[in-house]
Image (cartoon, rainbow, N blue to C red; front, top):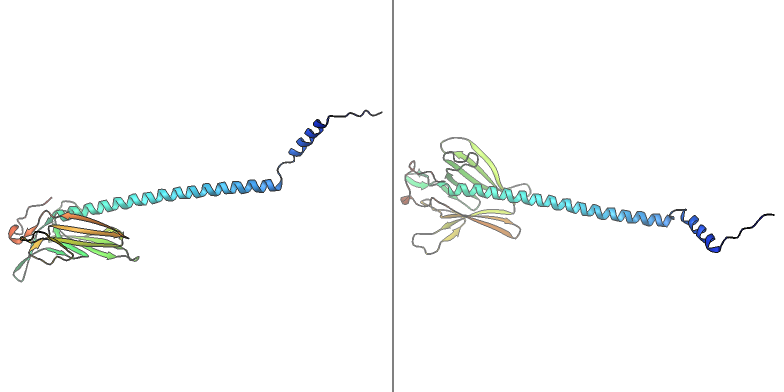
Length: 226
């Protein structure tokens, strides 16, 4: 005769639960798990892209500030080292200084390309690129020597312009003008406007050599200004 062994009900339920758990995840559970993993990967990818963009934007901003600082330093050195050279036209003595809203021409003893290396004529001109952005082009020619160098400063801005501080000997207050028409004097200061959107960065550069023709030395006897 076969002997029938009866197991407690709790033991049978426990074995059935163990057998059921060994069947693995159901299809719905797998789909939910895959969806969660995909969502986590998507969030991590977005965070990494945002981080990379922030780093790239920060580097571009640093590069922009450094270029701006270098360009303004070069311009300041040249304007402060301006030399009041004169020329004669039809028997009339005139300063070799031409200032307009979008251009500036003068003599200086500081060269962007070679530093303190003799007198050079500097010609600044505001130009427009293919994207309708403004940049400042600067060219140099050594006095009495043909040929020179040219480079681009203050690149990619909405607008760039010059102003000149005019003050007569009897004036209590001076005025800023965008065109310098007096050929017998030079301005006391030059102001550069750099516009980006609603932001207008104005830099004022004082000129060390200034005054009327009667207050300056004759050409060829001018001291070098540093």
